[in-house]
Length: 432
Image (cartoon, rainbow, N blue to C red):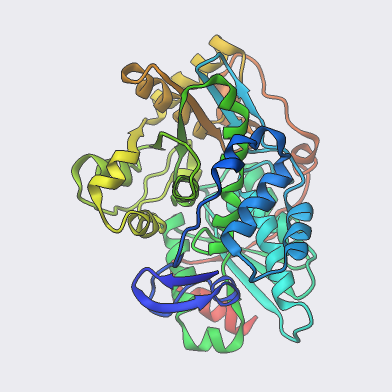
């Protein structure tokens, strides 16, 4: 598997360098030089495969013989050992539940796979890796859980002060050992900018072997493709065209979905579903991309005003706006509308959706008004209990809190508070 920088197609590296380095020096993002297709026979027989078998077939198709098949199988079996069920509300709409992993968020797929992949790459090498990651909520918890106590790897998580839920914050700040949290007085976009700047700083890159676990790292995108195939397997029997609605912040999840379409997965359409940080829906409507400062909402994981993976979306379509718009449409809700949809889902189906998934559901319903022949699958990206105050305020009964979250309530938060300045974070990293 070879990868190029979106800022320079001639800058080509292998998978190990792309994963361990995360970002090219030219500030682009790594993308595969070639996107292989799975055979038609694979899709004809997809119902016969387990989720692990599907993930293995997709991984070896993307990665090729760069890693042995036995090693890829081991990575899959250790990392992707929890389900991704589609729960149908009726015969035209259902939700792909991606919160059955350790941190109860979809990012467990990427974080656990990445942890196994990095461990494979550095095995036998006498060097430690420092994972520097920004989070708007769920990434931090998934990365903390995925890399916890992993030999040779330490994790430093930057998160925006006061802009993640209480339980999300506890997931970042209570593990200790090789996990450290930095509470930044800013937004997720600010945290993300600090991380990107750190990768380009000579003093920091001399002191640390830096890698990132954000979706800017190609190792995050590979496993995020797996559950689209798994979801298609579960809805194929309905015999309808399929549309996926993807709650989107940094747009890694949507990028992974579109990558599966390029690999041959017969998905008819995708919806980029956002809150009022609607940078990409606006682009899809106007053809003009205008990043803006992010605005806090109840769907905080989507509070991103400058989504990093937008360049990957364009790269997948050779910067062809018309081609991208043919496969993807945009949709957004404000907070009041989001709460109403959460109530509607509960009243209609008795299902508790989190604020992100609810926007995905609304996007499907809007799409189906003009496309009633499609079956819609919206991604439920995190367990609703991670947004306890919001969900309990909206719904008529308290949400059930899983034991692993309940256990965090009494734990003490440990985080280093830093001002919104790159130099403050750099000084902390240099002098720690």
